[in-house]
Structure formats: C-alpha cells, structure tokens
Image 1 (cartoon, rainbow, N blue to C red):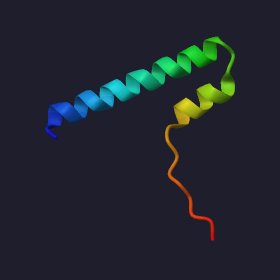
Image 2 (cartoon, rainbow, N blue to C red):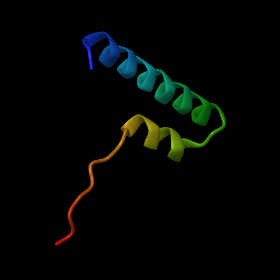
Image 3 (cartoon, rainbow, N blue to C red):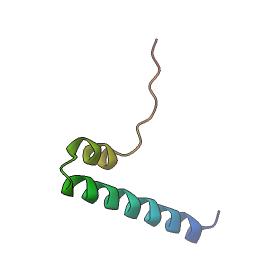
Image 4 (cartoon, rainbow, N blue to C red):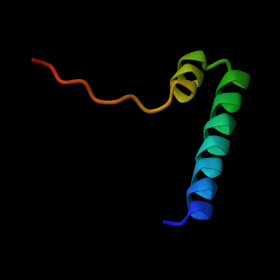
Length: 47
C-alpha cells in the first residue's frame, strides 16, 4: 500500500471508532464506549 492509502485507512478507522464511542456514551452504554476507546486487544496465550 502507498502512504496515502495507509493514512486514509487510519483516519477512517479512527473516525469510525470515535463515532461509535460518542454514540455509546450518548446512549449511556459505558461498557461499549470503553471497549471502543480501548481498541482491539491482542490475543493472550493461556498456558
């Protein structure tokens, strides 16, 4: 991918996450808002 496509993808994902967090906060869904703002979590290995 080129640099502009990477920036575009980053801005789109950030915008979508912000929109989801604001919507969740406005509907008093704090758990979902916190999850969105935390972002994707790396899987942990269970040994």
